[in-house]
Image (cartoon, rainbow, N blue to C red; front, side, top):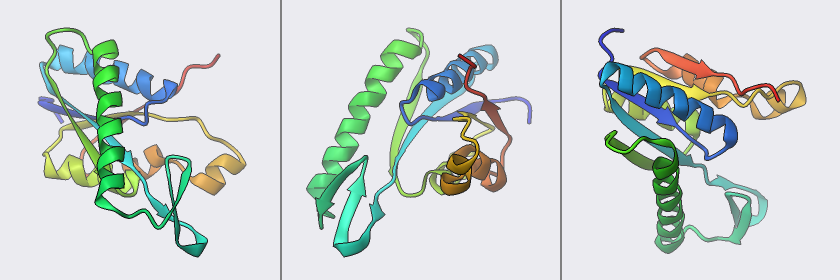
Length: 155
């Protein structure tokens, strides 16, 4: 596991994810590691040919323009997040991917030869966990490299 040269940090732009990013930045500074942020956009098909993306329904919009717009918006959010949470002078890269988050995060980690994935858990329990599962849990199972999960703080 050591030395850690490259850290991957997934984000969905939520408050818990910012705690994961905080930990990733701290580790990147400690180990002088490269920081790679990733956001995965998950388009999913629903009945009737409509596509649900980021909480909106669009009839049959699999067009490149829609995908470009989603990617552009996510890129802007990633830049804002980095400006707010990553100290000046700390270099980083980011990627915007499409697909199932756990699979894409794990695939990217292997493709980029990542040494460590640092990600937040959302703390779902009960029906939420049964119905939606946990992306962090799936990444732990799928990833070839170690995964550090950061629990969301108790309020």
